[in-house]
Length: 249
Image (cartoon, rainbow, N blue to C red; front, side, top):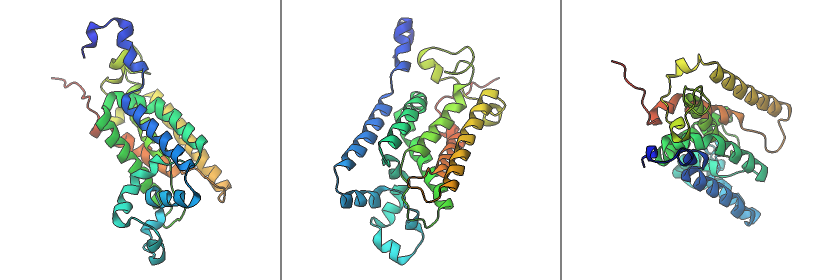
């Protein structure tokens, strides 16, 4: 579609709407959570055992391995499938708010297939860091926070660029999401980027402190998974980014 042939207001419209992939994923997250409410406790436990990320899977303790279904395939797919489960409605709602805000910007830039692949990779990075910090733990990891953290990091890579959605001389419509991104080291010299990174990591350090103060509380926040997804999104952004910087001759 050639946006140049549309009036100004019409050209702005796609940027204000949600990308189809965001709508579809949000609907799936909501549907999964709603359907789980109709399951018996025993059936819901089976869902968790098959799809949540359980560090105990990788402890090689024979008793635990015998209780956990799925075998080697589940050892692989649960690195990602845990992101479709949520602890309660508040957990889901908070994640959806952040997902709509940051996921939409990245989805407009990446397109559906790249966005889905990027989300899977950052979700897996989050569960991998969680595994390293909670090896052998029987508590399940659930939630899309790691993948959303990856989307936040990806958005930082271009949102504050000149012409970007939060940058100076910002463009209108889809063009705002397609500005070339600076290399990471150059981005880290941008004051807005540094402020965002500082606030984000401070928030997660506060979550870590809260977990430390209430180690036996139910539903503690997996802040390590957040950091794993965020760092992966920050570093792997160029691998998925379809927008290339102009070559200077």
